[in-house]
Image (cartoon, rainbow, N blue to C red):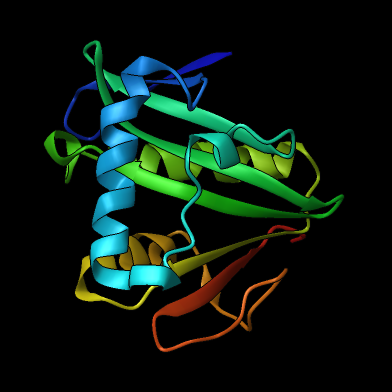
Length: 164
């Protein structure tokens, strides 16, 4: 399934349900995992291609002018609760609205599925400041750990109420 959205920059973004094991995803996913592990070490909770291929996870890529602009995923935790996973804008697509477009797509999908809540886990390092600002601007608020997560100085938890 594909959706096309126009960004503030005038560039159109195509959102496609995709395969996280596809060759066109490999470099950006490797960059994502390496960057997170370099700042969070063993506390990095990001999923690799196998984890993103689980039956409970839906993975999307975003494309601008035929170039991979980013990806994101939605994991079903239960019938009413989803988790935003592995949000990443490509370095060349930062500050273009690609990340917001992916997040908006994931939120819309959560609503479509009838979830009451979306949650996410992210880091506390300076690297995560732009992502946290994006999540807050979309209405996510701080929350307690959920699912099997444990709190640490390296992570924080956020949720968005979709029931209203």
